[in-house]
Amino acid sequence: IERAKFNWQRWGLQGNEFLRGAELYRADNNFRLAAFLLHQSVESVLKAIIQAILGYRVQMHNLSRLLRLTLLFSDELKNVFDLRTTEGAQIFTLLQNAYSQSRYNSSFEPDEESVRKLAKRVTLFYSTAESIYLQFLKDIK
Image (tube, rainbow, N blue to C red; front, side, top):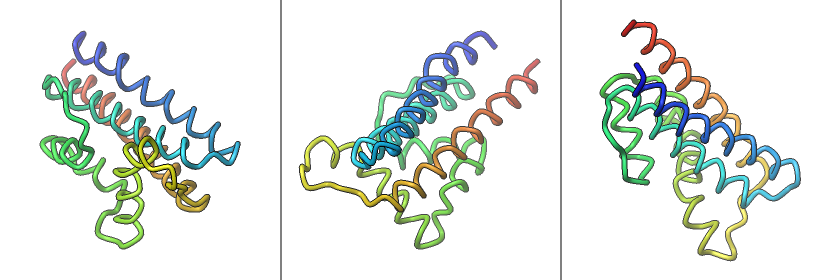
């Protein structure tokens, strides 16, 4: 229980702070940095939930692989992105590319609507992960 709490406090709460920062950048019409922070949010939350539940120390940054690891204990996180739809797949692709494109491609400028949709999914992603984490704590007590 203490290990799970430590990992959620370390990574999960950081993911929530990245999400809050993304909202500030989005409100300021800086969609490039908003997308970057949304990527960071999801990566941190994935690390949090994997390390809290599985006890597996995550050192990768690939969102697809991290998301696949969560399938060991839940389909809920993957379902947030609705990857079976064109829009869900496009939003997830934007999320995956946001980290490197924001840093290394000066012409990367995601549009407001895409970032708004992505922010909505990431907000749901965080609350879903938090619910899974809290249920895990309840179950092991």
